[in-house]
Length: 480
Ligand code: AMP
Ligand code: MG
Image (cartoon, rainbow, N blue to C red; front, side, top):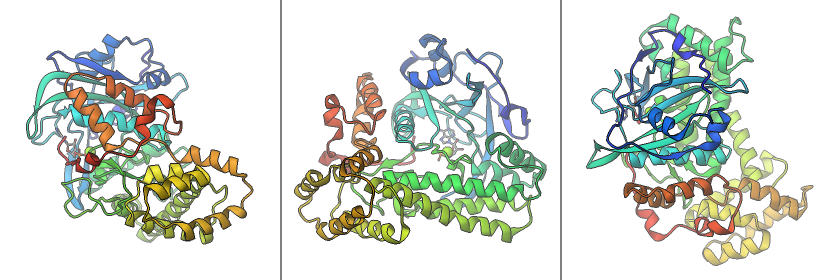
């Protein structure tokens, strides 16, 4: 049952514009529902036809006025002073039975006051990408906004060609971005900036005392810590976001706004996946640094409330410590170590990565095979004959000798930290091509497979294999 508890909506009209969805009306149909999420939200009484009506924008959630929020952003390093939810609408703030309040958004439900020259729509292919990726990251244990359902219709959306439209229902405790804070600072609306900062700390960072004179620096520190954790997760799993503009950075450290993202197949830290990013600003290798740059922009906004730039600088400097700690923890878990020692283990990781890069080794496959001990090493040698890891294995085995874990325990740990499947581009592409012809079975199957990424199920054996040669031809842009 819906149990509404407006909080964001109470911030007032400086923060958003009430905007109704523009429904997709030409034969709208439900493609998929995330039943696990619906259960978590205690919304199982809503029927499939009611979900279709809600997600297509036909029927509003009773007693909630949909709204689009205003924010700004640094896009590819350049400030854009006025952005906002251009094609997203907050359609409910719902309390689950456990007390957790969820913001629920439609993405692709038509124009808003922040749409600028665009149409407020989302095409089917990019909506499927967001829908499946949200599930994939969530099940890999990576903080992300969640997706509850996806619908499509015969309404056409014009990009390079006419394409089918779609709408995704997504959910998160908050969709606040760095750009929300930047917006009020940039436009000198300092009381609103204060209000937003207090709102955010009260609801999402409850250990922060907003009455404390240093609450802004505490706030920045917690955002630095969460962002560092998020990026460490991305690096460990080989996820490239593709458009890390400050308007795409969640204040809660969630993965948000899936556009031209990629899960890496071959380990290629400098590879540009987003063709709109001609300079490679957002490649894998640069993500940790870009996150720090983005945190700097957030600090630039917050300093207007807390004129102690040196204090905020010292907090920003801690980002590297948080990141290095989390990265080491996640990578040593992948290596099968039960303890992390930066002096011995970082060099071990740093020695491995260039070897994987040189031999164009598949990131996910490598780690999964490495989990299998000597038989896995044989498979790696057979697959990549030019990859000479003998020296490195010797060092790894020496390190294992200092460990309390038995070989069986180590294998168990490694299999729990090295997924058998990530949402590879070719798997996504196959599901999209089928869906564009009206067949959603592959999408549903892929949703199921990525929902258990650490478990290899014999019936899904095809999904765990190395990608086919055509996977390297898949090209992505910001168009969505
Ligand atoms: P993105 O790069 O997808 O994060 O989008 C940047 C900004 O453009 C955000 O404010 C979006 O809401 C807006 N935007 C992107 N695509 C559209 C669209 N088709 N219609 C309206 N606004 C859009
Ligand atoms: Mg965005």
